[in-house]
Image (cartoon, rainbow, N blue to C red; front, side, top):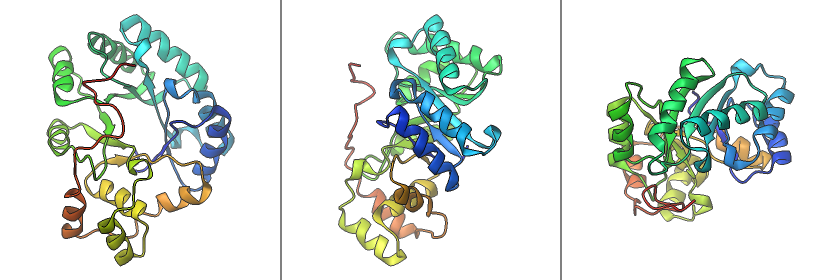
Length: 258
């Protein structure tokens, strides 16, 4: 799985086709979508239109909350495959840990994986205790835990736990929904001739966290991808991590009602 990908949350189906094609033309090789985003068809069309071999694009989708449970998840995944126009999806995630259902949903993902319809399976928005619940009923470890992760929400204990279990963390909302007007980020960015967004994405990468910033703007696609030609010092990494406020822009996985 590439360390940098494109997220398409809140991107319309028609727009997703254009943005995905544009991103792939600019070198992106990972696209993160979900059934709940309502744009799987557009993502599939964009990949097909790109001219790049399907095998060279890493595609992630997710099982939505209302589709959780064993039979429901299997059926929902079949719908996602049809919409994406793909026999095999690279990574399938449980979108949120719906109480009383996510263990059964995990069993469905295990079956999907065993049949070869997904190259990897994982979870999203799982705390450590949710991951422990999965471990209690399964010998398969989630390949990925996709969570809200950024300088204001560093989730260090969860990151350390995932690393100890061989689970790769992926950051959603890595750019804090545009809240980048932070003096230390600007200062570090100026030192490197980069933008605050590029500094944050580089911080993700150096922490071993896969990052999937969302944008629909061509220039931002380029900017977000230009993070592999510089390196943050240990001091700069610590300065960014010290911004942590345990602040969420999204919902807490222990308290959501959707």
